Structure formats: structure tokens, C-alpha cells
Image (tube, rainbow, N blue to C red; front, top):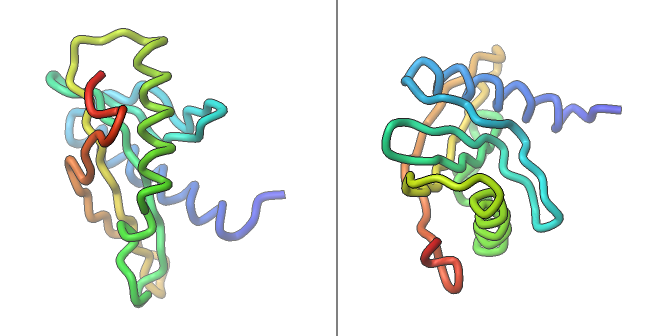
Length: 127
């Protein structure tokens, strides 16, 4: 059974995929999962392999969606991206983006796309 929250999240991810394609990104995979965690979207352009975390929220919430990508979540993304890069070699520089999807009361979505939203940290500082 798909919850309302998961359904909203799926719609947000689809909107971000459309946004990325429109902006000349090639989608590599969606919902990449390892035991360390999940990455919503993995895409690439000519210079970067991009790991995108999508956060979908209703308009009018106190905190911006990006703030829910805390240290623990970033570490899960970094560990998971490291596994992906070990399995799928590339010369491209990894980048970590956050896509904030805001849904208004009429269901219309807007995307605030944050490139390079966080950096590789700790033992994941270099691939």
C-alpha cells in the first residue's frame, strides 16, 4: 500500500526527472538502493555525475525541505554514492544536489534546485 506521503514523494521525483531532462541531464537511474541507503535520482551531464535528493513538501511549512537533509542523511547518501561509483566507474566529478519540490494548495509544483548542496565529508572526502 502506497501512503499519501510516498505518493506525494513519487510525484515530486517525477517532476524533478522532467526538470533534469529539460535541462539536458541524462538520467542514469532512479531510487538506487544499497544496504547503506537510497539515492532518489542519479543523473549526469558532460562534467558531473549527480546524486540528487528530492524533498517534496506542502507550501507553507516552517522549514525549507533542504533542512531535512541532515548530517545523518548526507552520510547515507555519501556511503551509497561511494558504492555506486565503485560499481560504475566514471571519470566525472561527483556532485550532490537537493531538489526542493513545493506543492501549493491547488497541487501545482514548483522546484527549487540546489546544485552542489553539500560536499563530500569525512572519509568520503575523495573518491
